[in-house]
Amino acid sequence: MRSAEDWRTLVACQRPEWPDQVRLGEVVDDLTASPSLVTPQECDTLTARLAQVAEGKAFLVQGGDCAERLDDLSTQAIRRKIVLLRQMSEILTSASTLPVVTVGRIAGQYAKPRSSPTETVDGRTLPVYRGDAVNGIGFTQAERQPDPARLRRVYDASQYTMDVLRGELCTSHEGLLLDYEEALTRRDPRSGRRYAGSGHLLWIGDRTRQLDGAHVAYFATIDNPIAVKLGPSTTPEHALALIDRLDPDRRPGRLTFVVRMGADRVRDLLPELVEKVNASGAPVAWVCDPMHGNTFQAPSRYKTRRFTDVLAEVAGFVEVHRALGTHAGGLHVELTGEDVTECVGRGVGFDDLHRNYESACDPRLNAGQALELAFLVAEMLR
Image (cartoon, rainbow, N blue to C red; front, side, top):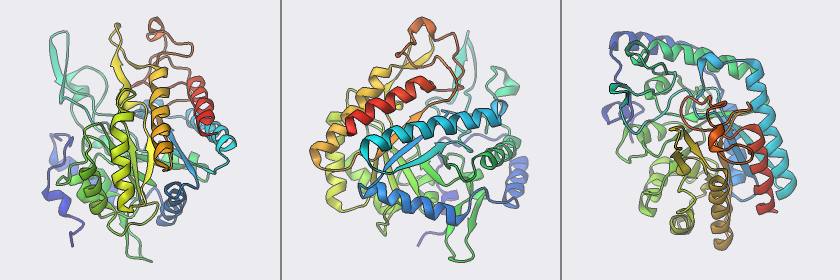
């Protein structure tokens, strides 16, 4: 049996190069002594609700910012996200007649994996922005220097958000920074089981799902409900191996696969994946992320997504599951309650992107686009 500390001996892809290891150790010690942000009971309750999704008896709506910003933290902004997610859930509940499990991509989504370690602007190269948990978005050497003190600021901001959300919404984020996650991991004195205390549901990204990597090793030691993002390079064999590592007991609600294939590939790549996982008997919940496989750079150099592509990927996801007789279990979307102009379509053109583009990383659906998506997906499920 692997020990809880085994992940430290493995490669942690996307781990920041913290320049001050002594300061990192001090911050980690401080977090280790701080209260957990969620309880084991709350995590177990979410696992039970996600078991209904896996069994085809419920639908998951999961959404929020691409990357939360420390400077944008406010009760009003948090409540606007809550209202939007609730509205989407109500629309989908009325159409599908299934209960909807609502989970925010919130209270911890402060770190982002990146495709390159550096960024070049006007001939100048600096470390890439990795989210407010690591460094600043300003294009200066000081801002882009990874700073361990930010981990404590993220904890405080997440605690503030939790206080606003408590009783209204479960939380989720990508468990990218394992130093932070391990520092907030606690053993439940009642059951002896380990839980990540930073959020109710954590996921492994498409860039960090290596079977021999630190993220899979860490996630195998916690008892929260967890998810894995599966991009177009995922083979059925890899998916089955992930199940063996992360859910060896085949516990319903434990593991969710969030697929992000792209609108033009989902119908080709998803069927074999679902067929072979389903044939294994593993009680996996299948969820569609129609955002990350459909990102491109507009002529104005803004990253964007077409609403039609987002909708097309969801349609392909639903069609595949319907053809196979399996359950299309939910949506995972990047969205905001603010009136941003980041995704093209439904009133936003390429010439509008500069008008209110506020995302720190990837483009989000605004409130109107998110509700329109919910209505159209409801028609698919009806």
